Amino acid sequence: MNARDRKQRLFVAEQGRKLAKGQISRRDFLKAAGMAGFGFSAAGMMRMETHGLRPQARPVMQEGGALLSDAQIAWLKEVGGRFSGSTVRISSESTAPSQIISALATNADDPNSFTNLTGIQVVWEQIPLDQVLSKLVQDTATESAQNDIYYMDQAWVGRFVNDTIDPSARLADGSDLNMPDFMFEDFVPELLPALASYDGRLVGLPFDIPIFIYMYRKDVYDQLGLSPATNMAEFLNAVKTIDEAALKNADGSDIRGYIGQWQSGHYALQCDWTAWLWSHGGSHTGPDGSVVINDEKGLAGAQYMMELAKYVPSGVTTWDWGGQGTAMTAGLGANVISWAEFFPGLDGDQSPTKGLWETADLPQEVELRPKDQCSFDETPAIGHQGGSCMGLSRYSQNADAAWIFLQYATSAPVQTLAAASSNTPIRLSAFEAPIVQERATVVAQTTRHFPAALKAIQTRMGTEPHFPGWATASGTGGPIPTELGLMTTGAQDIETTLNNIAGHIEDAINEV
Image 1 (cartoon, rainbow, N blue to C red):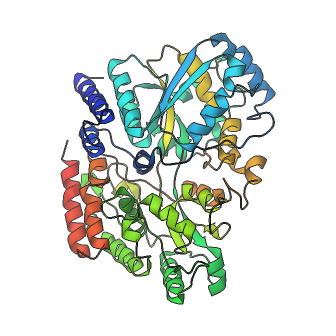
Image 2: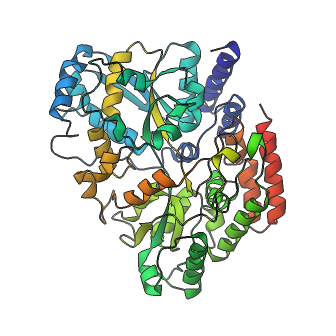
Image 3: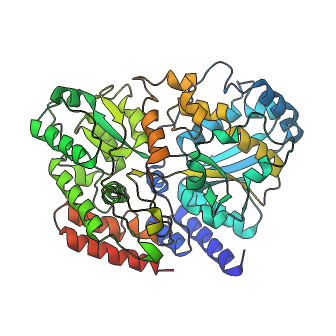
């Protein structure tokens, strides 16, 4: 690490301390982090803003806990037991897998919990993502880790590639510290380069993967004789047909054609916009760092979005992702392309639309701009994704104990239980596990949306640009969602909006 890099990290850490004390705003922190080269992915931004608002995830338990194999239990006792009395520390966002896996690992009543089998204590601090970054940059700048395992938003992986130990190297070293039956090949292969690698080098192991899927009201489709859309034209036709049918919910509320997350000036609006931009062959960036959002493909995407605007509930321009999820539960529309994480709530016991929503494959894009015709890792596809990985700190004084826990936390049995609690799996086997399949029905913490999520991961993942100024430009209060809000509310025409956004992106690229 050179002096400039260290100075940038210490600067971000100091801004994080100011944010925690209320001395600066989150937007000021994002701008400072962006200028220092630390951005946030789509899901990272969403979770940062909803931290503390989500209910605590509860593990779906089964007899015998995580059903570790006999070989894994023996290994944890014998090999892990060598480090009994040591402590492994992690700071992460408070996501469903973080909540579930930390609870499983430390459950005093489960004889097969990680701590009971190994004697290793796990201190898992769950805090807003901005504070995770603040701690991470402080650790790495001083090379004296307070955390043994690093939780990394996908947008940070390139910055911390030299601060972690390549897990593939450890898995290949033949040591008895490697967990039996770990099945590295069982990770969904598309997630390794998307979430956990930089320039071909594995930085960590995948941990979670929020992604856009297609959700629709099956009762409405059946009533009108519709089938799930297979392309963008059919999707728009379904939206229009449903809206023109003027259907009502049992409470008298209107069932509109589409539900968006279109709060003016909010990052949720930027996320929604990407589906229409990318699905019409557009992108934010072009070759060699150019900006092309205002070309004819971007124009087509914006025109499509504004056609959808004719068929949305009146409150849509005030809804962020939380508002969209609430509107879906209330049944205020019949079509959504958005986060798979919403779906379990639709089948919750208090949901007025319990059992009425279904999923389908994402409609085929009109065309896609190839990744090699974009810059800053932008990958156009309708399935907007975000995610994270876990990496082993190069500076840890408990690296072996931490490695044992990292393998446990990402192992197939533990990840399967996390999946059974409705968290989208990162392992192929978890999608097919009996306990996960049993919950693929209309039940709270359902898993019946998993096939759509897996298909989106494997074939339809889209990724926003990763450059230092992106989070500030695209985040809540930033110029991109502010301009989009002017467009969706009718205060500004499409061409002016896209031209203005292009200028803001160029400024953001040149900011550092």
